[in-house]
Structures are given as structure tokens and as C-alpha cells.
Image 1 (cartoon, helix red, strand yellow):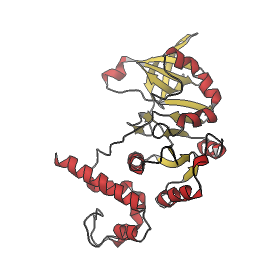
Image 2 (image 1 turned 30 degrees about the vertical axis):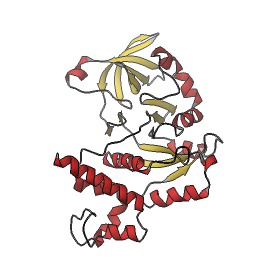
Image 3 (image 1 turned 120 degrees about the vertical axis):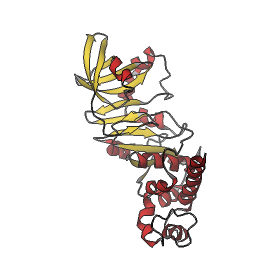
Image 4 (image 1 turned 180 degrees about the vertical axis):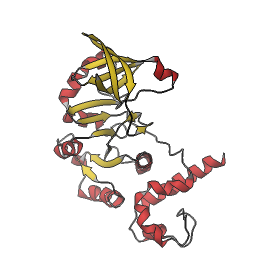
Amino acid sequence: MTGKIIKGIAGFYYVHGSDHVIYECRAKGIFRNKKIKPLVGDNVEITVLLKEPPEGNIDRILPRTNTLIRPAAANLDQALVVFALMDPRPNLNLLDRFLVLMEKNHVTVTLAFNKTDLAGEEAKEQYRRIYEPAGYPVMFFSTYEKAGIEDIRRYLEGKTTALAGPSGVGKSSLTNLLMPEARMETGSISEKIRRGKHTTRHSELFCLNRDTYLMDTPGFSSVFVDEMEPEDLKEYFPEFASFEEDCRFLGCVHMGEKVCGVKEAVQNGRISQSRYENYRLFYEELKSKRRY
């Protein structure tokens, strides 16, 4: 039987089978010997050992379309990155770090800002001006007022989406609004492994309908931009590309060069100042890391 791993913890993997039953599975030793770790989102082949309670073995991991390390996940179509407009205010350095990580892994991102009930149009416009020119669609919603939820539901339709963002911005509240029935279905798993149902400690995949999955991931308070050369960082700021033809030097990294199309675009307000300042910070971090 085929299925999809929806949760993994303490050596057990919970697989949503093609018969719509969730099986508690162990991975065969061959994966450990080959140093392959099954990930949430993996499509797998399993052998059913018991029907009641549903248990099985994972025999094979089917080819992955992509893999993320933070959060640990596979086969994502897109990511919905959630921050709050207020309480807490968005940490744009943290947000831009996460966007670099997603760009590096070729995962399409949409930004969703919660708590519109606490902020006005001016705050919304501020984040539109920063991120829409960079190529990131921006959505707004309120879990308190249940506003904008249907727009998000339409965005998720037919895709496997990672729901990501720092703690305290309303990701779990959004998950509960989108699929209370999924929370109920997986309640027995949460009880069995004695984990709180309301604080996400592990990546968990919920099936909204036949072709729509949402992965709730642990909140992050830090993201490291690493495992790349400083000169490659500019590739992960998509808004730079259209201004690079105005740089004097081929391979311009948009730092100390005097004639630079990207720096000029920042001065003219065509690229966000905050995005560029974070680019400079990440570049210096990478350069410093390489030195040591």
C-alpha cells in the first residue's frame, strides 16, 4: 500500500494510507544503514501488519521532489509564511532569513500577516511595499475575527503547503480554523505520544481533502543563512535580478562597488531598504564564516 508520512516521532512514523487509515509504522533497518531518514511529507510504500490497531512497516521511500532541513520536510509545493502585524511586530531580519532558505530550496512562498484586527491599512501597505516588488504575494487575515480565512483556504487547494513562522503569531489558531476535523482525527495520536495538541513541537501534515495537505511546523526563533558562498547570496533576493544589468562589473555583489544597479534601485526606492540592509548583514555573516 502507498501512503504519506504525516508525523514522525520517537522512531514511529504515522502514515496516511491510500485507504484513508492512519498507520503507526516503523522504518526498516535498511534506511538507517543507508543513513536515510524518513521525513514528514514523504510518499512511501508500506506493508500493513495489523488492521486494528493500524500498524505497518515502511518498505520504500518514493522519490522526493524537494527536501527541507529546517523544517524537516519533503515534497512541498509551497510555503505559507505567517507573521503577525502586531503583538509581536514582524522581525524582518528573521523573515528575510527564512525567505533566503526557501529560495535556496526552490520552494514558492506566500506571506500571510495575522492580527489585522490590531493594525490598520498603513501597516498592511508597509509590508506590501516591501515584499510584493520582491515577488512575494502578501495576504492578510485575523484568526480572532475569522477574516481572510477563505482566501487562505483557496490558496492551499490542491497543494502540499508548509505553514511556517515564529511562535505566537497564530499558526496553530489558523490550523484549527482551517481544519478542526483534522485536529480531531489526529487527537488520538497526540494522546498516544503524550504531546500537547496546541503547541507544535514537530512537523505534522494534515489532509484537508484528497489533494490538499497542510504541514504545521514548529515555531522558529532563529534561522541560519549558511551552506552557501557569499557571492551566491544575491541569487536568493529575486528583486535584485532586473537591476543587475545596470551594474558596471560582471559578478557585482552589490556591496562596495561604486556603480551598482541594485544599490541605485535601493536609493530610488525600487528595492526595499530593509531587504537590502538584511542582504548586507547576511553577506557579512557568510564572509566572516568562510574566513574561519
